[in-house]
Image (tube, rainbow, N blue to C red; front, side, top):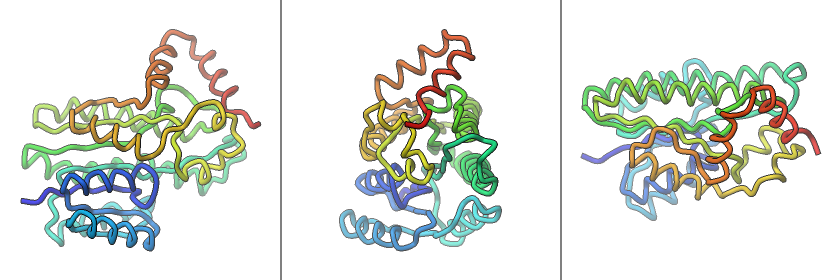
Length: 259
């Protein structure tokens, strides 16, 4: 039976590159994002280059009914999801007190609620079959508080903690859960998060989305629970454990302040 991978946020960045990798591995795909034209272009590319089937579900996953609708779409077409890639997410830059609440609420709904709901919907099928893989895209932001991006950092901390706990719960069923934790990556994230003026963008070299996606795919295949991209990122997430939290918060604030 053909294997299927479901990838959210597949119209750009890491999600798009993940789609290319899984297509190259012979998976049929279920791709979802808000931008229909981009998804259609990707579908045409992947079906032509890899002779696979690509199913599209155009939706805003931050909406309350979207995860159920996506699950029902897969059920109606008898698409057995073997790999779930929860990649969709957004950020926002600036002081929490000055943030647009609608965007903040959307960030929580997409980064946390939708990711959790989709996992809850597709996991029972994996448990029934006794096999499956889940990747939740977190961030190096998950390892410390993040002044000037307080809610984004908090959502990624949730993703990391949830993924680690779930990995323990399902390990005996031959199901793996991987938290992919990239640092700053070349993608549209910086623009949508209003981060162009943050010093963070100038302080660290940014890998391409393709490089991060390939690393994440390898980690997923190997059943790695926490996959931190890059030696510098790995070192930083280790070192901060030995500093007072107030110092860590102050350092993150300094790194992220405006140019």
